[in-house]
Length: 305
Image (cartoon, rainbow, N blue to C red):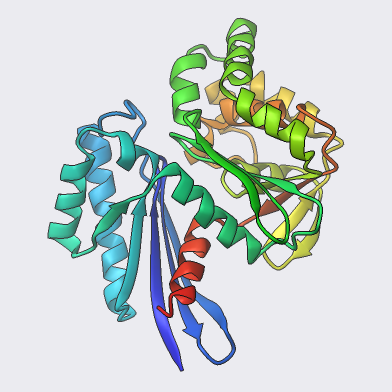
């Protein structure tokens, strides 16, 4: 017996749609559709969706609805994360989406988001007895999870998403040394709880969930770990980050393998990754294309869809 399921991840920067067919006998799902739109709900203000972003969001959801209808999907799960949690007009956005598409968006907490990220990454990455650190970078928040093959030891969502960091610390082109130092001090202060947890659990590897990690994966040598995960060779990580950080916006637009949709936020994103990578002696950096939306599918399967 098989059935189709659609998962929609409404993020601050990106809206994702994943449609799969679940095989109840084989106990696995086959991917049918993977679609994303760079909506950037929080581009101007994370606490209020501006008119242009609002329309981009509605258009993206209408496109998703057409695909869902085309594939005759009866089970649709749509979760909103940081921008939907925080924007004062998010409730109206949810109402308008439902009116136009019949898709009901549910706001979820940062803790729930982290739980779903872990479930999704477990389908992609072979956890071991020793703990690893999962890092999922969003526009409004960043989720950190310390987990091993048996359980999550720690999970927390921090309001240090790249849209927030960009608006606060990257106002010059290229970013100034003063702003870089201010950003690092902000991260040191904001992430003290995480830093203490790293000392406690000593995770060996960083597992990056797509997004900016995809860019690093494209720009650095890699080794295949699974069908949906690669190990990045980090010998040239610092020089690559330095090269990105010293470029102006116009120069970054000319850089190969950096999507135009990410050139504005890539500087603070790689500085964030560099900061975390430098907190302890990590062994490997892994990039997985699986994250929250795959976790949403897995949760639906666990509840017998």
